Image (cartoon, rainbow, N blue to C red; front, side, top):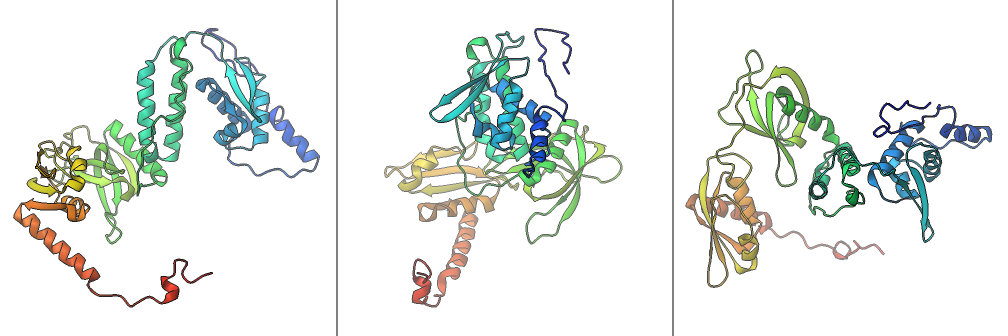
Length: 388
């Protein structure tokens, strides 16, 4: 059926065929011929896939290969080809076909209708760059939503910028030891919902593999990213009656260590912001701030000097190009782990108690390697484990 137009300059016409005709008719004929039906790749109906294809072609303004369309719609190339045939019958735009070498490409030629709202092309490019840098942290469904929102935004660019392509990445974040947040999508959505509505959540949390799970009534205030991981900053609150904080300082929870999150009806509107007086200090874990001085050898001095480690840091460059970094830290565990990462190229100068802690850690590390292991057999020492 045709959707009646109320505003000819802004309404997109869709022609939706009955599921027993059109796209599904090919499947019925395959049944008649006795050809076994391929297994569906997802639960989307042919009509839903047609609209997905239409949206993809409309808001991108570029060419797509048949394989790329099949991948984005999560279907076979045969199904993608049938969907493209159906797209040619739509009343909005014209499907253009072309070839590059041996591969066919498709694009949708849109009517030259000026958009009522124009976006800033440079701002959209910057948003796409932020997406490229953050995409690896997002759960799969959030990635798709981000891609779709940016692609749809290109429809509102000025006419001279309609070829702007935000789907092709301009940047990339290189990381190791990252966390796949796809299994935590539901909890992330709940936390974001609670942040928007200022609501208290009931959470179950496991701080480490060796720790028992604990339950809290928790009021999230801010979502943070630190060392390629999401953290929630907020207040642990009373579980009954008036919502009040149980501690003087906010509590930070790692999103990937949450085991369950349920948003309650209790409001956190009256709670203060989860501000942190030492947020400019080195480290995420909260503790009493302290001053430290660390000497770095010329081998790593350039790396250290180029970066900002705390808001009040001071760097002294010596004649041999080594540097001394003076900074404020709030987590001795994080500072010690960071210094140890430089090996023999870093030396803690002060405070004295931090030097002693580092000496204790080095002594413990030496104990791990003090005892020689038995000499491996020729088979064990061979590069392939003795296999040929």
